[in-house]
Length: 148
Image (cartoon, rainbow, N blue to C red; front, side):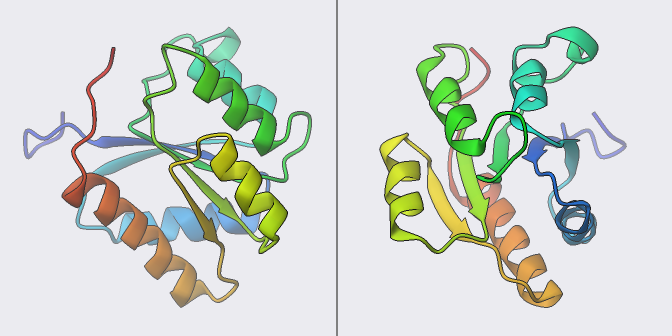
C-alpha cells in the first residue's frame, strides 16, 4: 500500500533490451495508475520470478506481464506456453510486446493464449503512448481475477 491507501499494480516486464526497459520505466513513471515495475532480462529469470524460485522467493504475483518474444536463454514463446499451462499462473494477462510484425509470430502468440499482441513502436513518444494505453486498458477498463 502507498500513501493513498491503494495497492500498486504489479507489472512484470520480461525484456532484454536496456533501451526498451528504460522507455517502459519512463512511460510508466508518468502514468495516472500507481504501479510497481519488476524487470527480468530473459525467459529463465521470468519463470523463476513467477514461481518465486531462487532470488525471487519474495516476488509478488504480477497483475500483468509484458513479454518480449525474442529473449536469451528461453524465448518468449516458451515462457508464454509455460505460463498458460500452469494452473497457478495462467490467469495472469500476458501482453506480448515485440518488434516482430511477422504474421507467424502473431498467430503463434495467440495460439499460445497471449491476451494481446502489440508491435513495439521505435519512437519514444509512440512507445510511451502504447505502454500507457496498455496500463489504462488492463487496469482502468478490464476486471482482472485476484490471486488464486
